[in-house]
Amino acid sequence: MNLQHLIGVLQALPADLQGKASEGERLLDLRRNTEGLSLRLAINLRDNNGSELIFDALLQLPARPSPEPVQLQSLSLGNSFNKRAQRYVDPMVAWAIKLLTETPGKIQRGARRKPQWQATLQSLVTALSRDADWTLQWLLRNEMRLEDLRKKQRLAWVLRQLADEGHVARVDWKDDESVIDGATDLLEKHYPKLAAQAPLDELEDMEFGDAEEAIAAVNTALAPLELRLHIIGSDDDSYLLSLQDASSTEHLRQALQDAGLNLQERDA
Image 1 (cartoon, helix red, strand yellow):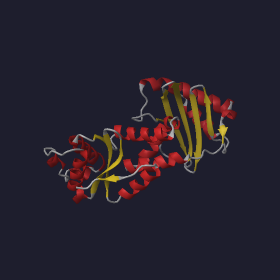
Image 2: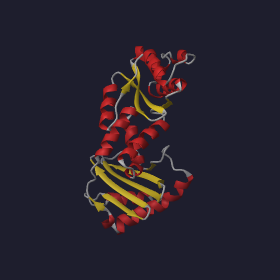
Image 3: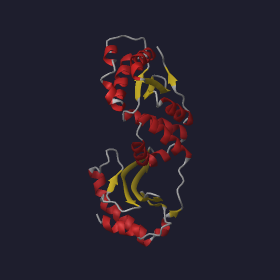
Image 4: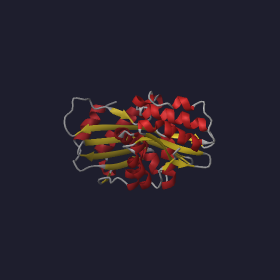
């Protein structure tokens, strides 16, 4: 991988050059801001069932000199190149060098404005994950997939992914045990220092009529810690739950409203 050659090419580009370019399934996205320059390289396979990013990488050049070495970072889940992606590293770097040196006119110039839906999702994902830096990386990693979806599909996909990654809990509305398990998982993930103080294990042997009764019981147990389970979405057979502390609830409420959702609370 001739990464140093690519870095030299990027440093020699006109200061106003930024935008996107594509050739077949290969994508290049060059961006600039006050922090420096970033180059995203991806291979996006499309078929009738949607799209699949088989290669997704980011190269960032800081505006100011840094002691940290510049490296090509994987944007795939886990932030590492799998064996399949590793095979594309050298060809994609070579393609970027060729495009930027021989045909830079293919880049659709212009500053890229963040679409409103992206800002709305950024606020929502930050409120649910409690990690602004993680949210930026998550949105960057999933940006192309999100662009392919319509508004309602996009929000449903985001919530489904956050549930799969443990930032919200999906529970069966008839299954009180799934509520206790979900609340315990959220507590350990987002409030590990408080987990030992929460008496949720005392609820495991209790029987509740449905998920809503269990949610109310969990909220009673967590009240001394100023934590509360909130329902942020529901369908025919399940609820999506978020665990929030008193200082973050209003932020989540506003983020949900901006996304077209409502915060639901269940009290004992």
